Image (tube, rainbow over all chains, first blue to last red; front, side, top):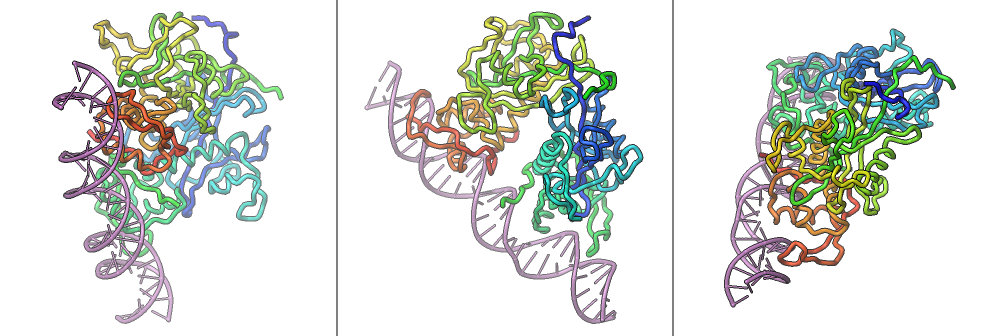
Length: 252
Length: 252
DNA sequence: GATCATAGTCGTCTTCCTGACGATAAACAC
DNA sequence: GTGTTTATCGTCAGGAAGACGACTATGATC
């Protein structure tokens, strides 16, 4: 059925990705360097146009695969197929957010274990994992003393929203396991919570809590000493997605 | 700066509204009857195209005002200016969701007190408050025995997502007060929770809980007997937006 | 090999929160 | 007055969480 195109203004629709991981005890996000104006040379979130025949989730999964090689993990399929968790975050459509044209961006949030090395179209120097504090401090100075330029477009806001979503969602869901390899220890899971929340947690209470929550963790029978110290039991993520009662983020 | 329009496919962008209220002890949503194809004559969520110079939130607020006369309540401004709560819900962009063309819809969730009578461009017969169960039961029969046609487009899915968002968000935020008039009693607030969750709550424990949560309720000093029985204290919504500890939705 | 540092795991104790009630208070209808 | 309705205060038992003590099993170091 034909439709009058003058009845509505045309938009470009993109997906932007907040890809989070935990590296060296810090919450990190994937950033890519822009190769063309606007904001040429600045760091930005990975993303791209939604194609004409593509669903939004498909577009996000495609971009995620292109940037990281990760296979998106359909939330409906609980099998842990080495894929990352992917969910829609929010949509950003300020008329001024892209100086070239009217762009509406549907941001997605992806959570991945530490493993993958970044790659942006094969060029490693144009993609990196950066601690989120570093990416979010506007006009400050990085660890090496160099001035840090803020992220391109409104990506600082998008990243902040994604980080806040991850921080709150690991409270009442088993999503923290998405940051862990398929088999992990209670201590490794605790360090994920500590890195994402930026706190320290009591190992004994944490152990009691997560092992006492039905469906959260399933022991595999194996043990490991990869963290040093006494061998620790290995677990796999249980089927439960909603934690009841939830994990409690310390006050302060 | 010119940009090659062939580099990206054009989209139409709309906002759809899930407007919820509590009427006669039931959670109700605003539905409008479609006056033109596709889905002519079927009920749908209110919504419309985003204009060229409009932010997404502005567009949602404009549609809300057009359909209900409600003034959107900016979440950043906590003043209770007789406005409804409005927040972005999610974005729906399946290529097949609108048979006419490629439409991406940014759904918003609005919560309002019971007061307003629906109006859709001045025609009351084309807008109504309907219990969400009635709108969501696909192919069933309404209270009057008439067959119920499902909502147009993917609006049943959007409505279901909005209802679920509201149900979970009143757990850990003070959002339930958005369903109440500016001054309300503990019993009225309890009936909101009961209607949204579809449960019955113990009046004594509920009273202890909400009056004991700092920042949730502020007594105005007045009382009312509009619910019958012993006069009840009137409260206004306190400044707190996050409830800690949260309200607990009964299991079952 | 003894010692030490590191991490993991099991218990205890106190405090707080919640669910399940009983009991009382203040209005209105008859 | 009696009954009904709604509001509000109190009590008690069970469970969850924070603060910690104690013990265990590795690898690293002397």
